[in-house]
Length: 214
Image (cartoon, rainbow, N blue to C red; front, top):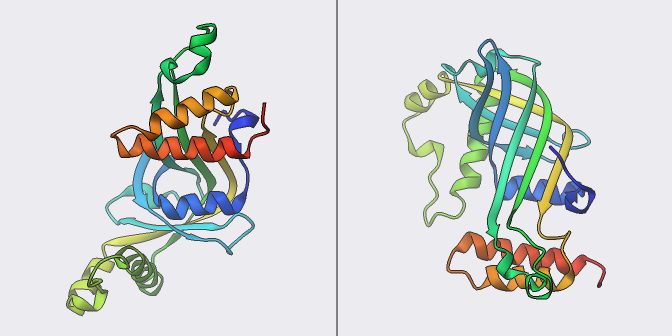
């Protein structure tokens, strides 16, 4: 991923937070038919390895798990928004501005390790279930379903583990614009009726607050 220095996020804790907040990633691999992407929710184990380890499961019918030890890339997309030149103070001053897009993206690189045993899979599914059900009024548990039903489903999935060897974070949030332009973007998006645009506006403001004053 092309990451100019002013858009780069290198703090591992921040990158881990982002994965946990946006766990649905695109697992990109190369197989017999070329490039393939599978969209699956991931569990992050922060302490497993210098950069952490990702875990997920896929359907047994999905051939991606047959690529043991293959290089892979997991893409975690974040919020994004179109940026109109009308939001820039620079437009009023000299007009030398053009449209762009602000976005957050994270890339995790590693190799596939395959887990095809019931104990490992049951543990992963149980942890994912507890995590995603935590906000429900009455969280669903694996024990709520018949044991033979769960046992049968576990036979139909395969686990994947990826020890992260490289993390790339890109927070393209108007850091390359003058202070007044950043303020205009934050205010404009912050007033939007679109929730995602408001979220991007909030991130622009947060990143602007860290930047040296011009």
